[in-house]
Amino acid sequence: MRTDLFDFELPDSAIALRPTEPRDAARMLVVHPVKGGCARDDAHLADKSVRDLPSLLNPGDALVFNDTRVIPAALSGMRIRGETQAKVDFNLTKQVSDNAWRAFARPAKRLEVGDRVHFGHSGESCMLGALDATVSAKGEAGEVELAFDFSGSVLDEAIRALGVMPLPPYIALKREPDERDRVSYQTVYASKEGAVAAPTAGLHFTPELFAALDARGISRHFVTLHVGPGTFLPVKADDTDGHVMHSEWGEISGETAAALNETRARGGRIVAVGSTSLRVLESAARDDGTLPAWAGETSIFITPGYRFKAIDVLMTNFHLPRSTLFMLVAAFSGLGTMRAAYGHAIHSGYRFYSYGDASLLFPSQYPSP
Image (cartoon, rainbow, N blue to C red; front, top):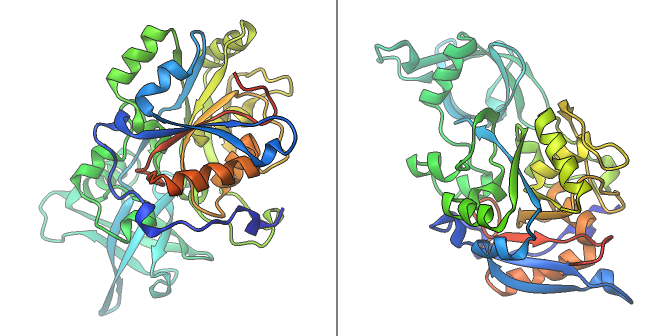
């Protein structure tokens, strides 16, 4: 499909630079595609709050969360080449060995293979106050590979000590990450380290909201997808067929798969919290919609025409123009529906992107409840 079909104008003022406090006080737009006639180009929209979620779901439904934990993957380093030095910023994207990471470098033009990069302060007495690496490979679009002098758990600890939260560019270019982001840019249930971007729909949940969902009889289950930055990048190709997705590692336990299969079998709905939960479920699902235990890499790219197998409802934030995530929600609820929903959201002052408000989407191919 033509990429420009997924473009729209978003005022800069709509981009949220801080989350709503408390988390579950964020707004939530409920989107039901309208059936019949030109239904795919229309939608029934309702302005709600994330706190309304229990009343919008049915007892017996199952929420699926991504329990990945974001690492402080943004590092500022000094390139050392002979007697010359130059500052370079890095966003780690994927660990490729016990001591090596792929990363996006800014400005990458300052780097060559073989360059040494120093992170931290040389005056520190603790060995974790300094971290050195060698540029072992250089790719396109600013991507490099860094081979660190540390490895394993020592490297992990050094990154935690020296790194900051890897806020998306539309936030990081407007303000510096700070200590508040170490809490704000992490879900309250995050447990498995490995993501370099947050599963942002999950940022809205609080213990109080979980208690309300429990009281309503809505179960919750966890999968893992270590989110990479490629998920959020705009598609630069003129046609979606020309876009290549970055792969990400995910996992569904046998216990979670069995519980979700049982939910579906007794008529409950699977509600994916975030596009990352959706992507790992759809990557694993069999053609009949059942789920096995699963682990592996996925580069699934969902665009209109895709037949969803494993989920019935999607809770997600508002996404970038021309992004794979806006293409995903257009595939789920219909392109016309989502253009109408986003138009309403912009006009009504909803806050966009990672720290923004939420939407609760129902699918175009099934009757709305």
